[in-house]
Image (cartoon, rainbow, N blue to C red):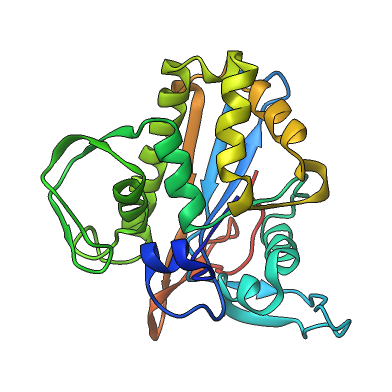
Length: 262
């Protein structure tokens, strides 16, 4: 699952600012659903993790060259969803069965379609870049503020992507709780309505490129409560000489770089 910072379209520009050229995968999560849908694991990949980016096909038919030690979010920037998926598979040695990307406007519309989400923050937030000010405590957020929370990283933690990932994990669970409160996944009509509000802001693989496929996947999760969802962050260490980047830690003693996730 990728959250894109695309500024294309008036709705995205209004929520994120900037120009309409280019996009990056500022949020990346590998989601594993248990076969019985009784549990799930969400692993966030910090966007500035230094990775081996494989050769990726471009729209003109020419491939990019494989490179090492580049930031993870460059994969989407140079080669779109295909390159992002290939890079994740190289990083994890795990095949990705499906791919879902949502942009700023789509995330905000999803939250608003659910009537907002309730999230508890443990510290005050005052981030002039995400335009969010919140006192520590429990808040019910609309789509615009929920998106701002997902983007917040300045003024919390060390100001890096590692600081905002826990906020994103709370939002994931808050969304699951909100869906459960409304019995959304047991009401095909209501589920279809919510899905229809965000499909224009979604990019998926061909296996999920229709409303029936998306709603079928969502309905399969109807018995999955938020307390059965484990959220993790890919373990990283600071990259020497590059204070804003991270190396993926290896399971081999003393080594850094790409390693398996099991």
